[in-house]
Length: 605
Image (cartoon, rainbow, N blue to C red; front, top):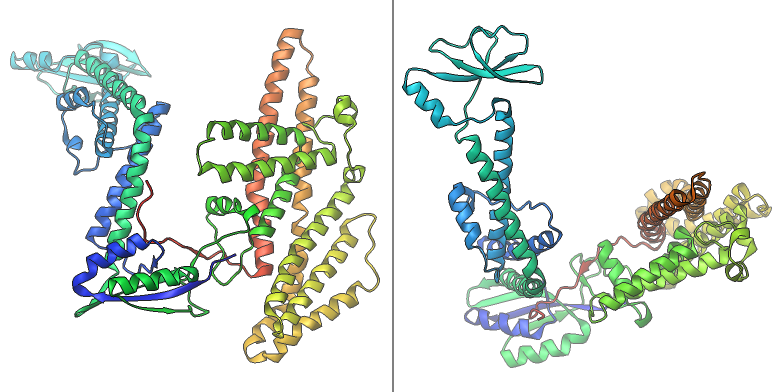
């Protein structure tokens, strides 16, 4: 369910604002309306959170020995360091107990790697000249022998110049003369440091950067829990700063607005009495867009909240809790889109392995639970359809071949019929739900009309697409009667619903598109099976000696089925999510515009 909320207005003495915020934080159930979201203190608090989150990313990159992209900004002391100071700072960097120290180390590593890369680029530029020393060039110039490095097209007459090498169609050399370079010669700037110095700097910078990364990686496991707690603390501090910025002063009285769960109203009232606050608790207006959503699905379906969080979706406060149908149908869609019992077993093994590794993590438990349900659903669907890694049924081991399967699912027309039936049922849940909530309002009649239109379109689409299905003769009369039901509430309020009457023909046609959209379950599932079959045929069709054949077969099967499984997971994110958040949600009237309930409370340690 979506927990009912009450709108709170809290009043206190302006002199007691700080104490009121502390007490409110200890109460831990008030969602404060944050209308003011900018200001110097808020920006500083946000920067503090961002710095700690960056430190966690630095540790992750260090453990993978990846490329650092944490370049210091202009205000950082590291940005203006010369190479010698940078190298000295790298040698002294060993204490990583704070996020600031970790971020500074990352900046130093980035600068060192940039220095190494710049030296290598300079060495590459000077490679055709061999060893170059700018001090030697300067000494010759002081002795009256000015030297200019140059390059010229390979066939150019050098006219007494000294050639050092030819590369890429150009000759590289030195012009020792007080006369300017001849026409066609291009001057090459001498380096600031000798090639020997550049080489040693590049090696030293890279070695120092690598050692710093190794030290960070060695400390990562110990530092990560510390920094995660620090992130939570700093996020809470930022929230406290934001709440304080939204506490309005009106002379001697300050006030704050927000929302509390209705079940916490007594606790808030008791706290107000003990603290001497004035409070007003009222039911939010129906069109209030700022009411936060605290979603509490039924006990067996609570893990769906992790999926909602991962997808970044939440129903609006007045839109209803669709957790149960979302969970059930998403599990079915997942199974049909992946469609292979073998893949389900592989995924389940991965989930169980992750579960063993994360067995002490309370946060990971609901994620692992919902993934287990999805994997088991896939295994059941694969057994029913007789699909195991795309292996032909006559080639399956006897233990699998003898498992009960539904032969009816082996026919493409039957599967398309099933997809349309699932779609009609899915959309019917939304329409019936609306009708129950709206009754006895006349709009409930319109929802029943849309329910009938959904089944009319199911009959029409099956009659067109499914080879063995014939639409009943009364289908069009049934459709017309239900359109008439839809018109009843619209005509009763024609002043406000006139545009809905004009859009009705397009909406009826759209209802057909909604039913047809569910055929994607058949199409994507079939494509997955065919891809698996083709990779199997490719692997088994190789004509090679036994040893290379075994290696090639293993490689093809591993890569092919791995790619197919990855594509199946991607199709779930695209198609299963769409059918729930678009087709079903449009029928139910869910906009997924809910604001999460974020109570002002003490940080969790």
